[in-house]
Length: 259
Ligand SMILES: [Zn+2]
Image 1 (cartoon, rainbow, N blue to C red):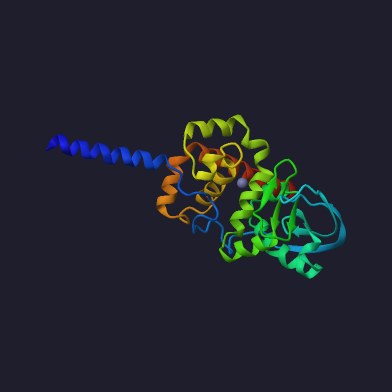
Image 2 (cartoon, rainbow, N blue to C red):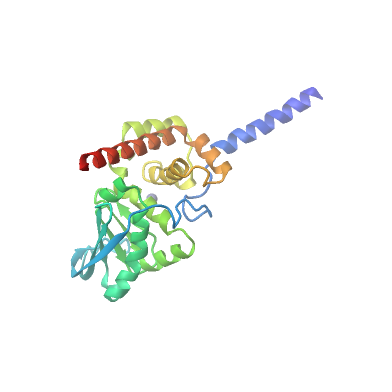
């Protein structure tokens, strides 16, 4: 009987250990109902300046044509002195149509940590329903108008833009850094299947959203999810904690310098 009990215990323990190493969700954004970023989270206001139409580089995952004419050009001037340009393809429609789709995207950009917004060069907006993508060295991301509307309706737009902005602003130089690679190897598990399948390309963006929410808004994620983050990626969580602390110190220096 004693033997049987210990055997049962061993099986339960093994199952728990196995499940602890499994990713939590297929991906960080659309495969769960977690609200990582909320509409009332702090972020600077912005004014949107229209700079007319121009010929611009409009990377598009559907084809290799790089440049487009008559692109609507906006500049968002944020109250914290950061600026982000927005290029809207003429297929989206008139200036008003372009502004209508740029505004929710910029509302999400306003929720980013300031150092990420500062590094973000511009945003490309296309007509269509493709999923977003980003260019790490180009420091920009691209979204598609119907997909933006769809992600607003499922409360996933802010998370999508956070994920793409990590690619555009943090992947270079951090994703290939010794510190990140060492933390990743020490953890030996991934927070999502998407991260596990793409450890070089997607793990940082996938992990960052969980780390940001857990560290900046403790208690917002369900307790079980927070526990899993601490179990699956403790070293990467510590990496982000250090990075976010550096950002806070940077802000203090800038504020002090202004005074
Ligand atoms: Zn990604």
